[in-house]
Image 1 (cartoon, rainbow, N blue to C red):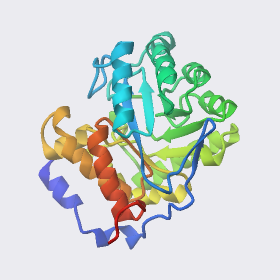
Image 2: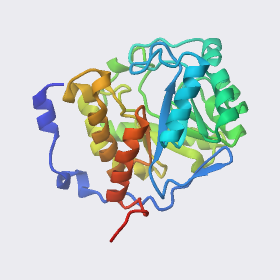
Image 3: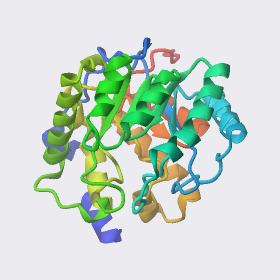
Length: 311
């Protein structure tokens, strides 16, 4: 990303389109698999558990059950409210894996986590069979990066188990999504796509109170487009569903701050704080202990943290 592009993008908060007020989060209770997450009280943290050899940030670190279990336990202890388990890389250019391989990676880990921890689990998949088998093992949320554009059966599976669903926007599959960054009107186009995805989910039987939307940072978006979405995140609250952001360690951050994926912690922290101020209810992150502190501070500014000492 060129510095002149960054400079052209940044302007004061008061110049936010329409000078829109922060969204009212008082009614947000997310229901998933018999559990309720009180998003009105505080921003919830989704910790990322990639069981892949080729994910962009932590590929290969948690390829066996023991290491995955240790990392899941550490994230739970550090403050993760949800553990998002993925067995297929969706980094730009990735080609995906078979259902059998994805199941081989995720099901043993789900079983072991369920034995040891009473925490909300999410399965990061676009495949109906993987979703169904994960749900049968006790997963409470399906995180579908395609927003039901790959398989509408994902919603039917979630509805059948009374599970929650995260609907993300992407214009295409990871193999070619970064060549599909042309939008007639970025915010309106992504909003329209997410609205259609939510409609499909509800039509399939998913409760409106069990839907989260995600604008899809890094999925078919340029660096400037990612910044534009972050700046206008409050618009996505207009859909009437909680909003999740997944900016953690992504390349658009590195394009601004410099450094590789291991050097994007502070840039990620900035996007998490801005996202919460602009209405995010869930943040999907790699670095749970550091982002927990950022979340608490941003929640206090946003008026969501009622436990602060006001003396």
